[in-house]
Length: 143
Image (cartoon, rainbow, N blue to C red; front, top):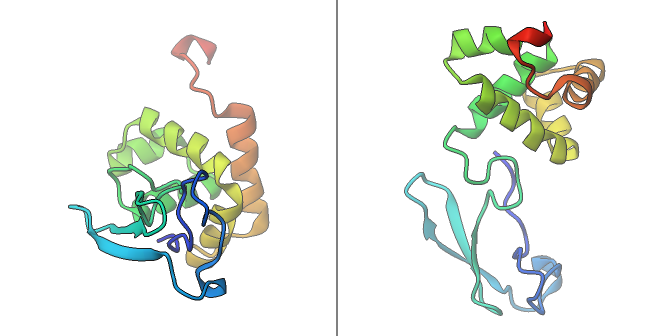
């Protein structure tokens, strides 16, 4: 699971980007959890609320973080999308959407995939190469 942000995502807030540890009094407070159990926070300065997944690949996803990471790890190991679709029961479009989202969060995901799934750098590089070169869905006529 991603680590919670240590400052709120509201760029208009005067405290945006200020680390909690650098402030005399923290401006972020816990504000319960969502129905899915994700921690919710509120900025005391601007009043905006956000969750611990805001700004990550897991934001507003119905699947659990572990499942998304597992699918990305399987792809990095060379498994085909069609195989993962059949075995895991996840739609191909969903996997492709996760891949595109993952590309936007590549730096954060690299560490998680290498640590939690013991992937090698070459496998992860292969995943990002796949996303860059072949990530777009092809029609059945393209072969």
